Length: 262
Image (cartoon, rainbow, N blue to C red; front, side, top):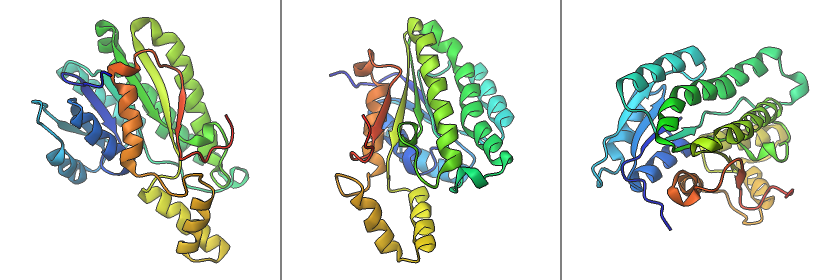
């Protein structure tokens, strides 16, 4: 099976921590040169210093605030002009704040729409010309299992993630003739700072300990544990590889079996 990414260039968003950081490491381990992209320069510099260079890769960082789509657009357009484009794009940003949909302010939906779909779209449009010219591209969106089954208490997130999933499926149909695949990877409960925050919120609301809230969450997962970010990264890296050349337009849950629908 060919999972060699030697000579490929990957842009990994939200790569200063958590899932994005793990994906950057996995792609570099497979031979890709990785550009780390988020707003925290010091964290990105630290991640960059730890990425594998055993296959002659050169890694770099880009800085922008993903809550400001025009800033992201400006930074990536300048980078693409100065370089040769990218073969792999991994769209990944932190999720909206938890809470029910019915009490969310309209501004919460607009902010989340800009953070996720609009920013993703700017990045895709910037990278498409070089991908089309090469007749090769991998666009991978980190979304959520909520696109298959809404998650209680994540009203804004459920809504926006669904929009991103439909956008990605549409792109997969449009870009297939150019050898560009578009897929979504859906993390379940993954051991990240966001999961810690969600569990802490549930513990407070239910007046139970964080330990008990953790056990309650794990009891809903057939594998009875949370995923390590590296386990998610392995799935994303496979979709970025030549081995996944005939897979496009899918939603791949990496959730330990928690999602109950097909």
